[in-house]
Length: 116
Image (cartoon, rainbow, N blue to C red; front, side):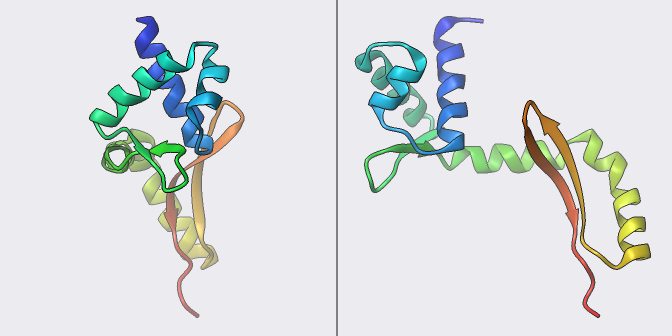
């Protein structure tokens, strides 16, 4: 994988956990601030990153659509859905399907509790 692509993906990962400044990104990436700015500029051009009102950088709107499509086409979600519905029917409680992603939990699907 190219170094620029790796750094770009790392930026998305970093600002996905919390908005960051160019200075913070350059420190985390161990690059000069102008390199971090160039990478962020490229990500902004494609709407993967946006500037927030406080001047920090956050995830951009294009990721919403990509995230929804990833969830929609996730085979795990499709295969587990009948089991979630059955468990929800049996317990009348909200049921979540989650997957472990390194040390984080990523919610894949939810069936809401039915009103009493």
